[in-house]
Image (cartoon, rainbow, N blue to C red; front, side, top):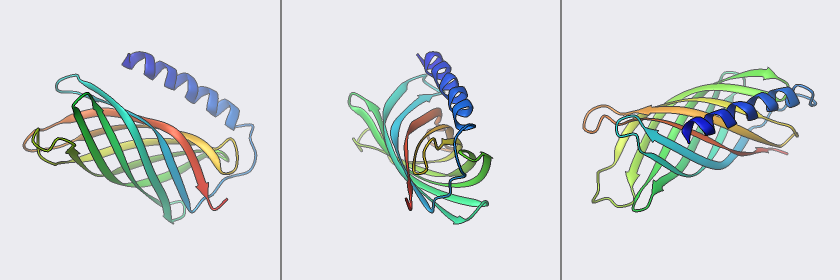
Length: 169
């Protein structure tokens, strides 16, 4: 299933780059709302989880720094957890309507059933691809890696994808 999702993501990415290269003027937003789906696969026990994510991204220093803070809820059955992250991203403009960002930052995660395991912290690394076919509405794909040290030493690969809404319109 993971290979199928990765293949589909690559096809969507190639199609978006081809379509976006023909689109209009460069897009700049002070803030961006991201809403989408999320998936994660543990590298230790090979378990996969799916869920939803919402994040807000702001640009304090144009062309140098973007900050993203988001909440993701993942899980299957009774094993659910909520994670909050704060990412520091360096943006790169690939075309007038395609952006790429590299980001890193802390992630705090807590199971919804606190008796299962305690709150954990991790370092998250992301690659963020944003496509703007229209001025204020677009879509994104964000593969990620997160890893924690100490107690559980959890490491996982993940991805989020969804809708972008830019502000101001």
